[in-house]
Length: 534
Image (cartoon, rainbow, N blue to C red; front, side, top):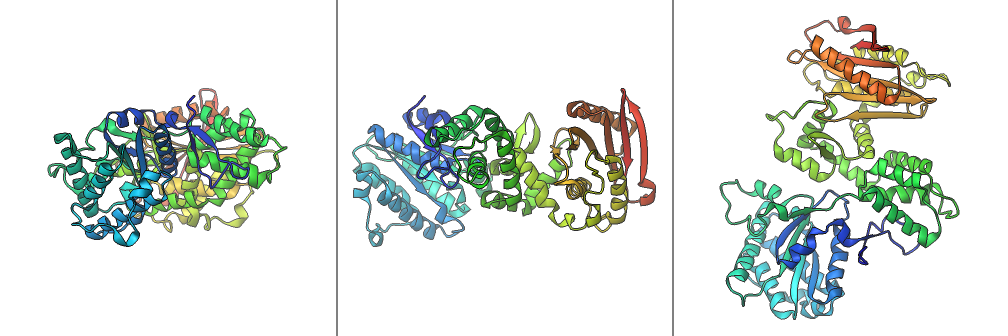
């Protein structure tokens, strides 16, 4: 294993003073080494809070320690919202200069200008000249990482990339020309994704070069279960506190390796739950409690991510996912919209099935979207169908039929009701009436699976429910009914239950809403299924 290490987010851990979780640098993205060796310019993109900045800082330290090249990291975050290219290029030059000053490399500090004496030049050449100046005056080749490059507005982006293109091309044409050996643009998105918003594909303006080879767009993967174990065991080595194997498995289940969540789970467990008592082992139950605490607290990272749900293009994609649609509606959702949500890290694509990136996000997304709906559920419904031994899911869903009948029009039908409304209202009703009184409530929703499932677990018994909609253009035909029964039966087997509930929402608003309330109980392959009409 490489001796070089990368620290993860020191805002969350680990839980001993002045120590940080560590992971081998190259194991997170082994492809970067060859790109730099081959003098390539490339893109590194990954969702929010994936460890990009930390990775860059420690990778730059690794390059500088080897004494073959110099590596500089420069953040462009302060250029966010700057639309004027002249102002933005002046600010970018100042950021490069600041990066030189705060670097631990003496050669960089020696080349930094006083803040009030940065060279003046035309904005269209300012950055190219600055990078040329550095490359000429350094005694080794320069590698530079521009962090948060995707915050640039269109006009500054064009100006910046044109200068990089010119310097890169001149370096190749003239061996005596000096320009950085390698450069990376780092952010949430692939360079082509935001270039496509700057200019149409048939107007290249030369901007795609030198970042025009798809294989040169790298990403940082999430941690593997093994890497989570490495991470947590380093806390054990520092403090003596043990993370049991089950705790590591539970951390993987809730986070699926998302770096910020991996750290947040450990921090919540050790600091908030165990109160820094290192004599107590961290168990699976403690990590499970930590995850549920994070879901309720929704700290800054999660809260800022969930605010994206207010963006129309994000909501359109998320609506399709929550509804369990078979595919995206190409008339309202573009490929760029889908890629944007994937880049944010809200969703992941597994063999053309789009679903929340991890169980914590899955839960928080629903809570965010149903927060206002929850206030409409009567307080006297809470815990009514739990008696300490069993959960009366049949009674709960009969009450839900009445609730839906009384409230569906107020919730937006027929003109404002979306396909996701029935699912969100169902999620809300079950969450409000059962949360805190049953062992577990789980929702499974994804685009590409053609179903939305949820179940509650109480006293060791699972109560699986499947949700379906019937619309005038996509009716709940006999064929769809049979497919739905088979899907629910499969889900029941997965949950270990012999009883299931299939809830069908009829969204044909030309019908009398009272006629939609139906209940049918059938035997299906030796199991009992209740078909609930709403």
